[in-house]
Amino acid sequence: MKIANRKIGKGHKPYIIAEMSGNHNGDITRAIELIKAAKDAGADAVKLQTYTADTITINHDSEEFMIRGGLWDGSKLYDLYEQAHTPWDWHKTLFDEAEKLGITIFSSPFDHTAVDFLESLNAPAYKIASFELIDLPLIRKVAATGKPIIMSTGNANLAEIEEAVLAAKAAGANDLILLHCTSGYPTPASQANISTISVIRDAFNVEVGLSDHTMDIGVSVAAVALGACVIEKHFTLARTDGGPDSAFSLEKEELKSLVVNCNMAFEAIGKPNFISTEAELQTKCHRRSLYIVKDIKRGDTLTEEHIRSVRPGNGIKPKYLDEVLGKKAKNNLKFGKPLSFEDF
Image (cartoon, rainbow, N blue to C red):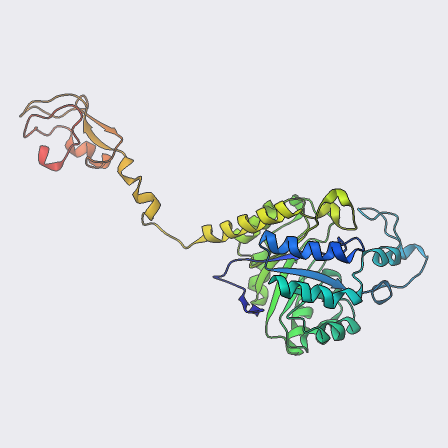
């Protein structure tokens, strides 16, 4: 499929999404700097999240609306989202800035009004966040736009992923990518389970990527080697600046390294090959072969005293050693001569 004319899928470099989330820290100038940093790092797209505290939860003080454990321990959901949301009146400015810089920008809507709002900005694609994967009415609303959809699968079982895929397709989605995701913030690499990528691809016959919440880039690079066509990673200007997601976000140079190394992993996949590559042809001459290691006179019998398998590879292959031993030398053979079939 394509997002803003960038082809995504098998045979194309991984599509790198830099997730801004709440790392703008409530400052639109910082949000613009984040877009510039994503562009400079080589990301294909920067992604926003479009919600308000009132469109994603309710302002309630009961225990079930409190976060217990993890990065945001002790926070009330409403207060966290009030702090982390991207003001809607910033969106056009950020979309315009991204267009000016030449980087794609799109967003995750969290309710129907956000979809309508993003449509008014002509968003080129949509992302369904992991926690919204079970919100089938929202998925149908997004699919009805006809835009490409990327859906994260964190916390979802296979049946829930299937329901989401079927809902999207039934509502008109033709371009759909699933992102394997572990919804831990941060996620230990040991819980990334990226072997799931191939299972999702085979089960739903769609392209698959990774939404990566681990602390480094290694899991993403490994995912590309397993066929991930999209990598989504949170990023910030500096983790020391703080922010809701800063603790598990990449800084600019790390994001740049992610792009470089994911592209390298993609290039390294290549295709099954058992013919010497151009690089190998430079070294093939250094393989082992049979050489004369002691002078021998014409007519004498060739023995292990006279012949050894050594580098380089200008003589006959070592596999012929047993056939050579016991043969008579046709000519005088000097130390250091590569052995040929004409020598005996």
